Image (cartoon, rainbow, N blue to C red; front, top):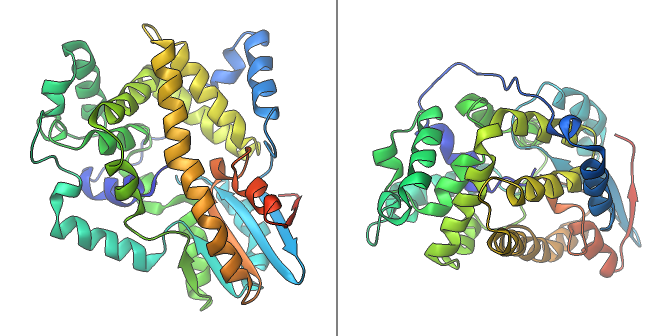
Length: 330
């Protein structure tokens, strides 16, 4: 899943220590009318490479294995690691969204400049949001162990990232780092270089380019899913392990568009903007990094699964650059 890096790195610091509360919701797809479920699958299948988590890209003598990851902890990752461990061991370089050096640099930036995450001027979220929306946000943050008065001062893009972490998963799931963390730990233990696909400040730059109102739109999109957060978390994980990453995106959009009181044009615009900012722009920037690493030997690149499919997904962009991509059994 393409959860943006900053939430995964900092939420564990902000949320109080707690026992892991497993998400015990129901799979939303199972409860949808047949017509809606079919429409979602059709929408997912309309883009290139909608299914699959493990791929091989070749061009000449160069080989890159690509693994779509899920950033939260799940016992099902053990089987995935068993499958990809021989691929990691055979690589010259492992590429991830953020390696240990980037994590350390990010934490240092936050310690040095809290304004990266906390607004020092302009309206607080309590002042910017209507009472009804603020009440929903306050409840959602309390469920994550965060006092609303503190959240009110956070930059809105960061709050949207906190909302992306299901309350029922809590800080423990985030702290473990999901499949990404497992890949990094294994490669580091074997002495295989782990390099980042992007500079550690990328997430900051992406969101700094968005207006305050656009960032509020991200909060609203997240709040639309909050009443069914446990169901949503279970559904996302199930879809991921069913190797259907694009279905995750289509379902998220569907739930936001059909939420009570949703303004359809606004939601559509928000999703277009988020896809461009959080996925497309980053995907394009990753291609030369992957190609440069592949020039030195076999590469395994592990990153959020939502970056794989689509017209501007990593797989299609590699194809456009002359690579042949092949889905492998996971």
